[in-house]
Image: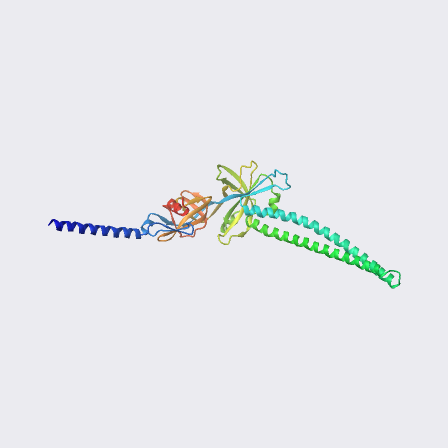
Length: 364
């Protein structure tokens, strides 16, 4: 009897051990960790039961009055040159723009130099032409004298040599002129190339050269469908992240000529006084452009996250996938925030669990 009980216990133990192993294998095969794609832009939850933690809503349009607000950044400041240079120093936030502006100045210097060299070479060529004419007259005279037995053959040969030397020097001067003209053309082409890059970044080199010390330039982007609401020389209110309790007044300096084909945004450059030099290139700001009334998409304030001056929401792409999307926002009215660009009517976005999605997407 005891022997049978021992066998029974051994059988039960083996059965339980095998069962536990199968459960562990089943659990290990059930992937529950979120999957990140596109550098955290897309978050996929293999276990769809986890998705119920994230509450969502479909955005809609409402006829309300809202202030058009756009994030911006100080792209450049104008300061004195401590070395007494003829031009003030432009401090850019973007190293590429700084490099292009510097190369434009270098090309302009080169153009001035090459223009001087060209004038000099043209003057030398005129002198060589006069010498050649003189040598041609002398050669003709010596040939005539030789024909009448007055001049020797050596004198004719010397006159021919002098003419050849003058023509060679003229050819050399013409080559130097062509080199200078080529360098001038290259410098002008270089200016066009670098100028186009500066303009795409929101700057006109000529305006920068005339800019006064104590000036800061803010670049922000406005949705294409809102650009009609702002005008050049219009005032705007600016709050910098570095000075949240201080309001600055800026003026719209220029609206870019090009619409970004991907984002459908247009760059706007804003001029703000920086007499105390407290504003530094690279500082973030929020710019308000006044009031507008229309049907606007709006979202819950709990849906929004802000990272480095940019605003994002998380769109529900499918039953188990969320996608991070950058948006352009306006004024907050109560618990709702106006969205000017980035969301379509009826899009489903996360309203709860947003901070968890942020941590997964950005890694913190």
